[in-house]
Image (tube, rainbow, N blue to C red; front, side, top):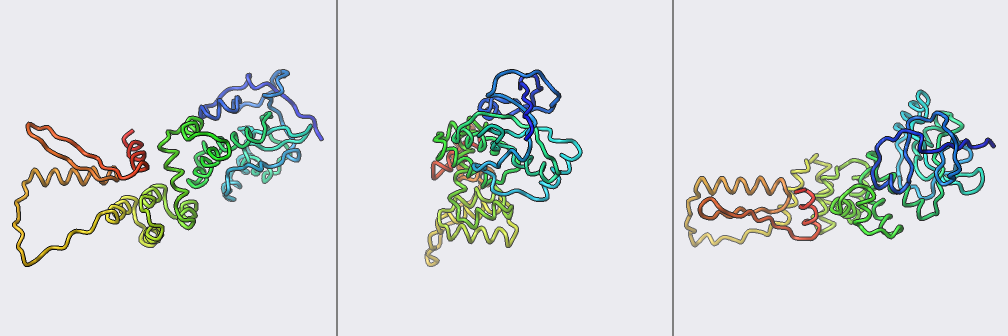
Length: 310
């Protein structure tokens, strides 16, 4: 077993991090691993650690690793080395547990590396879970279901309110809520979203349909017909629209002529409704004044609307 070389963190250059993760880890991810003077702060160390001394993270939020992407990362590590250190905690002398960076850890093994640069942290189980979840959520290559499950675990297991979760990952409350709503979809649709059979936009439209049977029917129609997000939003609006009253054909209904101005207003209402995904009504008054009324049917729709308007 080789000795772990310990270096200070403050002498390394700092790339940008999400403010939540940066504040939580109190570490700066580095690009330059040249030797630096040591200090005695055992809570913030960086060193080259034998891969055989590291065990994987039992709290790993990521549920799927793409083998092709891992092989590409391994090829990059073979050529350039590990640019961004992993983060570990020391569980016993000379034995470490991965907090974040499992893709880099696995790719380094594929590349035949025997050691890896790592930040060495002191963290209990709850802190470790929180750090691992936040570090993974902030990465762009997670699928929406993994992000949603990460948010849910931060709320359920780390006892964080939704607003605090948003602060830590740099997202607003409405965005966090939209991800959490995805977990209400039937499992088949969640799997389709995870496997990129549908997009986040498709899923957000489907969730506005309350009946799970209708949700599944719509999901299958999307895949069979390659529907766009806008088309799905139109289908959802049709589902919500009450049936038109039956006409009495024995009694003729007088036709009121529609002015060109009214036709223009109706076209504007339809355009804004399509963009926002909720019903919009334009009411004209005298002297060029009027109102634009935006309707919503639930708190979730309101949060989604506010997110769009921001």
